[in-house]
Length: 112
Image (spheres, rainbow, N blue to C red):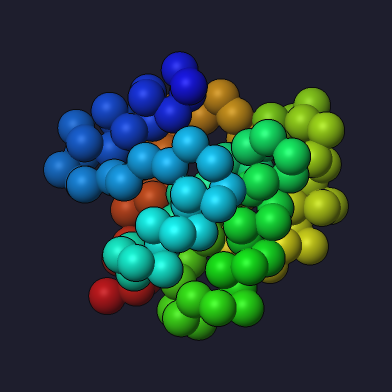
């Protein structure tokens, strides 16, 4: 919850309008309803929620949707499993504000 609030606040400070989900199911639902420009997904949601959401979105969301994962180096999910979810990029947690801005803005720029 703390990381979620911190990342949302940093993105708002950058002039973006994040939509925050607390589970993989909620992330999937919001994404299908809102068609965001970018999905910043915590791969460590409970019960492999991040991995499941990424896999489901890859099959159902528009191909242009970019998924950037956030993943701890010591995460039980593991980088290999995260990459198997067909992600566009992976950010290590905790992520520095400068790195977050750099990667998010780069992906948003690439989509325009």
